[in-house]
Image 1: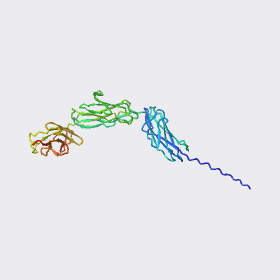
Image 2: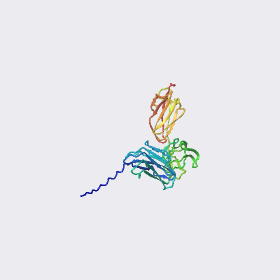
Image 3: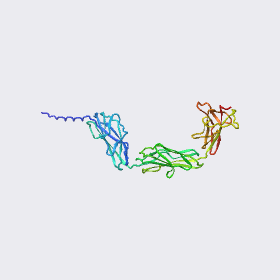
Image 4: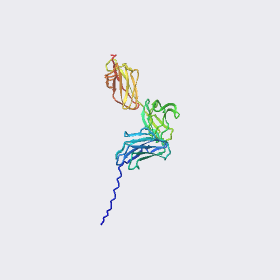
Length: 399
């Protein structure tokens, strides 16, 4: 009997192990205003295959109306050129390995709302098991551009006295999606105040009789702001002069730009001052001519200057005033209602003394410097009140 056997089928050859490069692409921003703008392409590269790739070349594709800009982040493992054709190269990527990501910013021309821009990156790296995932793409869509410039600071209210300085201080920011036009800020000078100072860096500020909408005040200009950009700091200051207690002074800045804005709600900044009736601190620095530690009739006051009363400060918590010192040693300072002590600074040949006629509660004649220093106790004053604070000194040339 003849036996006939069937031969088994030969096993199929196993697919060779190969690399499989996977490219991903994403954008920092997926929208751009129709006036133009920018974004950044981030490219990821991974070898999902079972074998190392060969050297990898990554071709970067930007459409017309876009261009590479500064600020790219290229890790040391990559070598890139951004001249057409833009490419980046990487050494062979091991199986399962992931390359360091690339971040490449680019600019975008103006376009039509609703249109999309497609950017892509395609990798080649020798024979692969699949090339279906070798290209990463991301799209950028045009949206209506907006401009919204506004003051960063909030309006504020203060209580001050005649002679004090008040002002406005802020930056201007563009929170829109498109560049603004040139900026203009006008600030009328309120009645009861006089010009003190204005910004001179970053802004071009002028003061005149009709510069603030036909009124006396300031007109300041600044160049355009990009989206998210802040201007230079703007500072305008005035001195209260001739105002009466109870008067209200408004220093108001109004911002405008040559571009159409989405809102004007943040285009005004105001500092409001209510004028208070001041309190007064006065007194005299008297010279104990006969050195008996008592103030006698006819004893003179110390003179102001480098060889006499150097300075008298009526100091409070966060506020004070430098007194006006007269040739006869008397002084006067006007302050807001509050709690104060008077600080005296005298120089050689004068030194402070202890006396029942002196209001000093502390003094130091050996300070290690030019000044002798002394101060009174604290005193609380309301509007219209007056305090008399005296200090006694001796001269090394007398007595």
